[in-house]
Length: 125
Length: 310
Image (cartoon, rainbow over all chains, first blue to last red; front, side, top):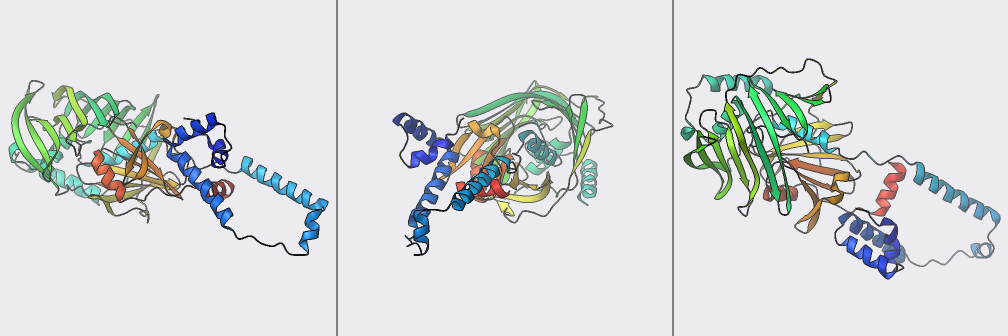
């Protein structure tokens, strides 16, 4: 199953083509992971929208009209750090290996009676 | 201590006068079947809704040692040690400590009817859970090994079916445990996870073991069925679950995979991943899940932070 994670934000903002929209809708009906991701995205958007509007401090206003070059440089550097972080950050924890877990569960099952151990346990996932 | 107690109990049982199957309770039937010597091959099948899986297997038990050949290959059992073969190498997994076995009082033996199976005198026994028929066993009279086992779901449908298609009682078989292992791991008890309950739907948490470097295995049993809950840090879902069946318990979604001998259920909370594996029937799984940590919010913000900072 291919998860359309890259389309979820655009789906939320109604920016998808009708074909993409139908595909994502169909996928969400059967995918708890993407449904949860979509709910997360929606929550973040709601949080941002719920923030009160703030008047910028007066001294800042003139500088925003014509940002100095160092602001652009800092923003570029921050974006680069963020991108590098996404690429080289540690991998997610190793997934459960079903063979290993089945072996560990079976090893414990067989030391005492039970419906599986008495008839001869069948190993494997 | 348990390891010293169990042999004493077994010696005590062996020295007792032999009771007939008609005289025994369910606990005695299970204990007796656990110790019997036999050779057999059989089929085991599991069905939950539209999910179904089946396989064949072969088992030989002699002098307390068993050899099982199944879909995962060959493995040899002796006491608390399980040795599995991969290629020409053997790997050992030994349970370092375990709690004494006891059967939940929610089970009882119902009717017992003399019958024959595979041309052998046998007795059909019904295992009751309260007023509900939970299992049907056809037990070989000579060896007390079940030749047929059916486990029923709450609706009365067959959840698991296991039947010997070939059976020899008390074969003269010499088996040897491999002398050397590529790896010899020991399952050692660790502190139970504070997130997992001491019991769930009548299943008691009897032991907790380490799983790898950072996870735990919580073993629950009611004496008849059992399951393990593996808990680890938030991780990605196993690839096998990409096509898993989704099901709900009280409106909460879980994913399941049915294999011949086990049912697997995977879910995640905001900071942990869980895998339940066991031989318990679906209504028991649903009851147990109600007592375990619930699947939780899985937001992109959390994933982003975990990805950046681990």
